[in-house]
Image 1: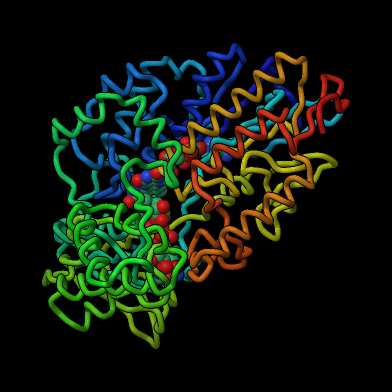
Image 2: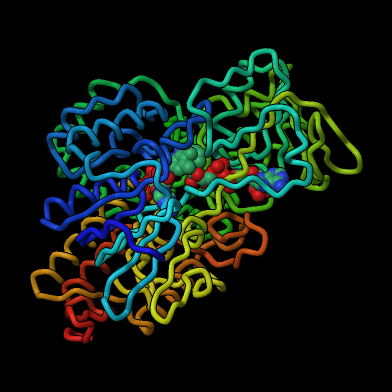
Length: 545
Ligand code: FAD
Ligand code: NAP
């Protein structure tokens, strides 16, 4: 590595999504010099990249927003109950402007490598263009769902029509009018985009390998009274949300389905179905731990599908049967199932007749079946949680790469750090609640914790922190143990790494709950960063082991 323009930087932040933006703000407040490097040409992360038709939040707007500045949360007005991607991106840009963040963000710059210099106790971070920046701390605010993936279909380059991935959507409007469109995948992104694409396309063919459970959002314009209720005592409500299991207020019932008569369970599911959104999964406390409870919820949704889709054969194909409800991320939609009643929409089941390749004019599947398309939309997901981190050539002590260390699955202490990589933090890393929660709440908690930690180090004249291997091992075991008390590991989900061929199958997020996790992190800090090794400027261990 050749070093150019070395900067006296305390903290280098990778990523300018909500995590990187908030962290930059906190670093400035803490008096630490910080700079953000972002691959995109704008802020917003997920909401910058995922511009597919129908992209929308599945957490209510009043809760999927920053809660750290009372003035910001009072002044911003969401137009809908569940905000669409354009409005969330507008919000991200508003935050960047309001806090003058852009002057410390370098856009269109991808970080390709980071090497820990053990002697200096600092990181040399390299951009794809070859610039090297030296800094004390690196924070990977790179997102859990930021490496979109198209399966390795033979013939991909042969297809002469247009191809898209929902996670790399063009910045100009895409017109499907009069076109024959294929959508590959039936996860959240597909379920949101299919109804919108179907309204434009001449013909829409959906290639489904695994059906998913989806709940109607019942989205609509923001109700003034509801907004007023939130804004009255907003700060207090945010505090309450942070103590919940998912970081979402008014969602989780503590009642157990297993202690509730069946007719009462069905009434509760019906009420939640009518309210709409992911809160369906909060109907009972034991839906993802009791198979019997889960079966009732799953059958309730399957019956809804059968009621919504006119063709019984198509309805049965859309009914998920190979995983418990909620163990793959629950989807939310606006008229998804009803879309299959349209004469221009066809569902193709590729579970037992997989897509084999692309041709010049379309897709081939099963035993010689082929169809021609003008456009193919890949809604095929992400190399989630670890993919973005391991794509950067991160080298810690003794030159060990993060990719090698995580070969058998991610290992972290609290999802914040990984042993052998001093002064390298992750936001919403594997081993933290992250993708199982309202991500805004989890992002804020990690940013606040890291800020407090760096301020603590600075005020004590310390310059290094590192996860201890024994603490990390115990945490990884705990994350696994908690996951295996639930039904989650029964699904071939991206939570398990199952969507990427060859990826180790380990349940990656921490399912113990946002509130419990926050308490644990706070306790660790209060005990002098228990489980971490703190070192002085010379690299010598100086603080509590
Ligand atoms: P991101 O928003 O992913 O930002 C990471 C940034 O890092 C990106 O801009 C990326 O370009 C940049 N980056 C990555 N690697 C590099 C590199 N090597 N060099 C430079 N820059 C890099 N969560 C919810 O809680 N509720 C929802 O409703 C919800 N909906 C979602 C919908 C979609 C379509 C997707 C994909 C995710 C959704 N999520 C949702 C999760 C969402 O990712 C988080 O809510 C949140 O936006 C993550 O913010 P972040 O800043 O941590 O990461
Ligand atoms: P995803 O859930 O991973 O779905 C990918 C889809 O592509 C699956 O249906 C998968 O089928 C299919 N697929 C992959 N490879 C295939 C192949 N070779 N042949 C046929 N089908 C194939 O990805 P996503 O829909 O982009 O969602 C990812 C996550 O982002 C969500 O779970 C959620 O956390 C977040 N998200 C949220 C929202 C929201 O509502 N706010 C919207 C979009 C995304 P299999 O299931 O069989 O693998």
